Amino acid sequence: MCLTLREEIKTKLKNKNFHCEKELTLSIISGKWKVVILWHLGVEGPHRFSDLQRLFENISHKTLSNQLKELIEDGIISRKVYPETPPKVEYSMTDLGYTLLPIIELMFTWGKKRITQLKQEKLI
Image 1 (cartoon, one colour):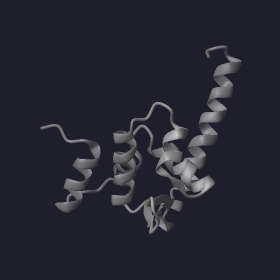
Image 2 (cartoon, rainbow, N blue to C red; image 1 turned 135 degrees about the vertical axis):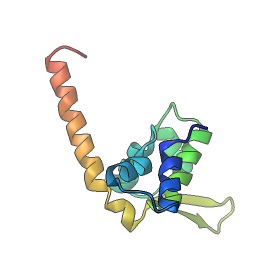
Image 3 (cartoon, rainbow, N blue to C red; image 1 turned 180 degrees about the horizontal axis):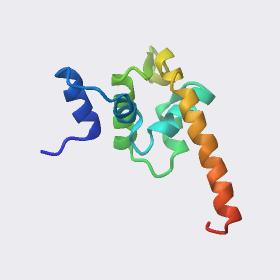
Image 4 (cartoon, helix red, strand yellow; image 1 turned 30 degrees about the vertical axis):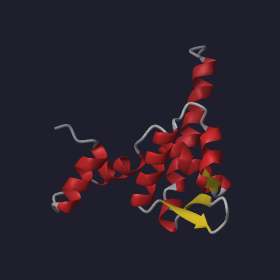
């Protein structure tokens, strides 16, 4: 059986057999879209599902839904349902999620600098 990093870390935590903080952090933010979802929610504020889906043209409904569910499970984002017709649902960062924002912004800054270097070297 092949466990994902996320499943492996959850099992280790449950069994009290976990000792790597870096793996824990990676298990929470790993996923093709999680870091950019967190950046948008952290910098721009709450978004509805359809707003997030429009931001990422290549993401499927199922993938976005799964990534949001995992972030909610981990306490990084919250989901608020407004009692309206049709129902309005917004996703936003939790206090815990905001503690990840400096890391995500450093990743953004590093990536921006690296892209500039690659352009100067005519590699992209």
